[in-house]
Image (cartoon, rainbow, N blue to C red; front, side, top):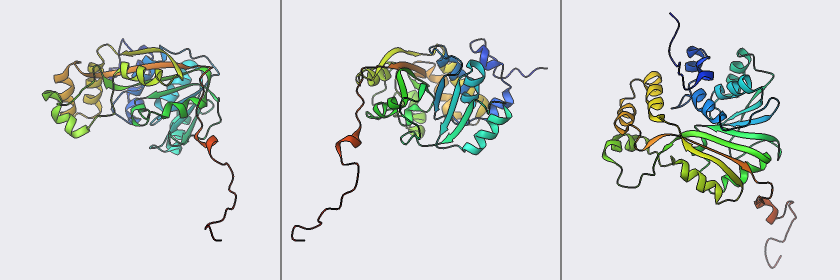
Amino acid sequence: MADQRLISDRFPRASAYHPEWVLGGVGGGANPLWLTEWLSEALDLRPGMRVLDLGCGRALSSVFLHREFGVLVWATDLWYSAAENFQRVRDAGAQDGVFPIRADARSLPFPEDFFDAVVSIDSFMYYGTDDLYLNYLARFVKPGGAVGIALAGFLSEIDVPVPAHLGEWWAAELPYCLHTADWWRRHWERSGILEVSVADTLPDGWRFWRDWIKLIAPTNETEIRAVEEDAGRYFGYVRAVGSRRSEAQLFDPLMSVPAEYVKRPLLRNS
């Protein structure tokens, strides 16, 4: 009998990938192919485009983007080995279109205006909430190019006190970095850098969250119980897409200080 795991009518592209390959590349609490397919529906991806897959984990999303859309992908992550990712990319036959790199999201080794699009799958919450981060990231995407994220989030912001049914999970996970789609829209729009075209939630996202956790971490009873009891009241998956405004001025903090060292007297009486 064919392996029926991870087959979903909602995600026909992702369903074509072997579950053993997907499960062998687990790197987080969300199915990277489901979220990448959902995000790609809001992007105009064309063959030959240069795409930064930021926080790519074990590069499953990068292989998917290359195979499904013919884009060239720089699979960039700090936590996972670029060498391991290259083996996975090579075994997938994608070595001519996916280029693994190990780098910090705050110290990217790319020239300005290099990418046609930046995508981030279930990792942007770890660095993108910084008020200044979008100003930094946007310089790597061409004017008019897209920035898109799909990640765990809230359907409505949670203030203290935390709802009782989430208390145990909240104490264990401390998910303060999770936010709503509307929060991401405001966070981006107030910068004036992006024209936000999409900011929404995945219908029944909590069910996909629950099903994934049950498959990859069945002993994680705290999270499974929280997701099931919440049943989509507060959290699920969110998505946001914007394009870099051509007229946006990006602040460069290095322009305000001398670029070269010049020896100066140390003391007043020297």
